[in-house]
Length: 155
Image (cartoon, rainbow, N blue to C red):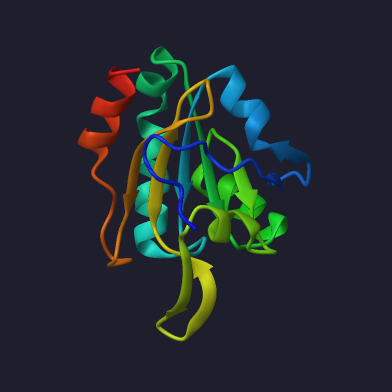
């Protein structure tokens, strides 16, 4: 199963870096939502990607878009990562792999790491419909931020 453009986004509840539950469906109803799935905290490309989101958050806020970073790391790891990188948006722990399966970004094996997220970005509108989707085959690549920003601008 994958979350396709035009389909209803899967609604899952994940703990944030402070171990508080975040129900994605409730977030979708409040504002456009960017879900940035990433393989692992404290890795070079993931750090660069999430810092890019951090540094562009002012523009995303103007568009009333909320970013959530999602990985299978524990909330404790995500808290340390968010603090170290001064991330100004929530990170969600998909330790039980519910979201990566629901969104079709489950990576069976990446360089010997089993069951982690593929790098992917989804934009969900306030009706809970997927409006943009990018799933990268190469974890060394970052998402196309220009295409994401274009999709946000079309909401």
